[in-house]
Length: 333
Ligand code: MEV
Image (cartoon, rainbow, N blue to C red; front, side, top):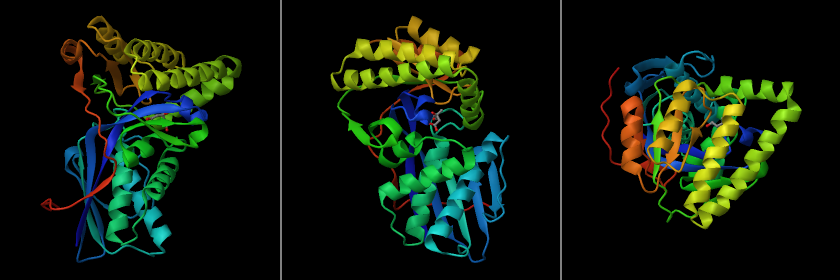
């Protein structure tokens, strides 16, 4: 028996970090995916292979190994916790042996939601594999619990996008998901550095700053909240100028929260100089990616970013998590 599930990565347009404190956020699902294939084994072992990251390991979900400092192997923590979660939910003492193969198109540690996409795709594949038929809201919820378990703190923004796809406004305290129109052509470009981002550490650094300077940092979170709400309106009204300007202001506030780096800053300003009307850090910062909005000069911005770092144009994905059929998979152990 073999099942395959895929889930998209995401890029946050507005509200990263503030979303941890109950503020709203806007994010888009992107056309880069994590694809998880599960196949039954004849023995009782669980083997995970992520060829793109050079990972080939046996897992024991009951004996958690946390690869906190190893970005690549960190992906195993999400898979292992997903297995454990599904085992608990289904009442299975132990899964039958299986081979899990992960094909990852999303650059890891780039702030583009690779861990959420792997978690959502793994839980979905396990759901089909065990004939549990989880619904989308259950998948999003379980995947968020796995992220919380691995990272300590996490908002549901990444797992929501990987589950549902599209352009999403996540309301205050993550109470409601609103799908924003997809007919808008966003002309978004991602620039990412090879310096990986550690979400757990960055979220913790913002928490410490907020606790140390509450009267300074709380108003920054409130401003980000206002930016996100204004941006929602700008998206609905297709007001490019306002959208760009709000991205620039949001970037300044992320810098104030201490998650900027010289590489990210350089890309943000290169993008603006090349014609982007908005550019900012996207995701946790501290490495990872920037996002630039350039309705008129998309090729110029892409070219200038590619001169200094990695960059690509985002195509939005209206599709969230999916079960896939009919792909062949060569097992390599
Ligand atoms: C990470 O993609 C976004 C953060 O806000 C963390 C989270 O929301 O879990 C930094």
